[in-house]
Image (cartoon, rainbow, N blue to C red):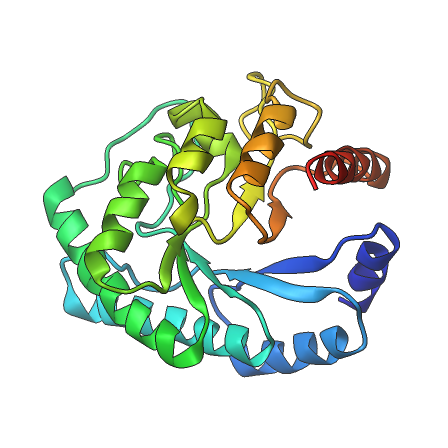
Length: 257
C-alpha cells in the first residue's frame, strides 16, 4: 500500500479509490490503510464496495446482509476521510459471449432499490458520506444501465446523500453523448469513473487510447463546475501508459480551469 501511494504521489495523483474485499476483517484493513494514508499526500476518495448479500434479493436476510456490509464500508470511509461508497445495486455478472437476463421484474427491483438506498441514505447523512450508485452497461447487469435510471432511484429515496458515479466506458455503450448527460445530471454526480473505449476491448482502456472525445467531456465538466474526483477505472498496462494518460488529463484540466 505504501509503495502504491508513493508512486501515486510521484505521478501527481491526488486520491485513491479502494476496492473492498468481499470477505476478511474490515477493521484490520481499515487500520492498515489508515496507517499508510496518514503519511501520504494522497487522500482516500471513495471505496468501491463489493458486498455480500444482495440489495435486491427477494430474501430479506440477503438484503439485510448487503445493507450491513455496505454500512460497514461507509463507516470506514467516514473514518478515513473519504467522500463516499460506490455501489452497484445488483450483483454484477461476468462479461461473456452471451448475455443472460437476471431473474426478477424490473419494477420490483426498482421498488427494492429505492427502499434499500433510502435506508443507506439515512446512514450516509449520519456519517456525512455519500452512498453512490454506479450504472453499468447491459452486458454486466439488466438493472440500472444509465444515469437516468440511477437518478430516478436517487430522487425517490428522499435523501440528498444518494448520488451517482457515471463511468465513461459504460456510458459510451449505453448513452454515447457523455457530455450532454454530464450536463443533464450534474446535480447528482459526485464522483466519476474515467476510462476510454476503443470499441475492440471488452474493458475500458487508458484515456487517450480509445475513441472518446475527452476535450468535449472536460468542457462539460467545466460548464457544470464539477469539482470531485476523476477516478481511473481501466486496464493499466504499464507505468509509461499511466503517465501518458495522466499528462493528457492534467492538460485538459488546466485548459478548462
